[in-house]
Picture 1 (tube, one colour):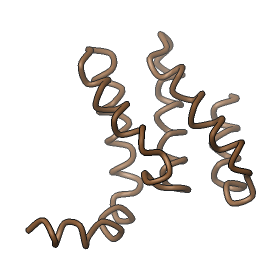
Picture 2 (picture 1 turned 30 degrees about the vertical axis):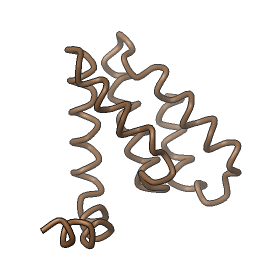
Picture 3 (picture 1 turned 90 degrees about the vertical axis):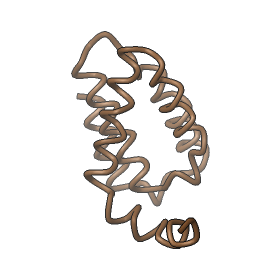
Length: 107
């Protein structure tokens, strides 16, 4: 329940959160990333997605490294792939628009 409350706060109040609060969220949400409870892990994936949607990858640069590092273990790879999938499903158009210049420059 607390995870869904945090998700709701991020969706509705993100722009009014102070930097100290967003830093706290970023530094602490991933501590439970590999929790034994699958519902908690799923909620964390949703919260990570909500945070990225509200703020962006640029302001959480260690997230991608964290997701890549967790691909090395079975539970971690499942979580990372699920989190990436949720982000792409939910924010794919936003990411495509935002990074279109990067993709064009790579070609």
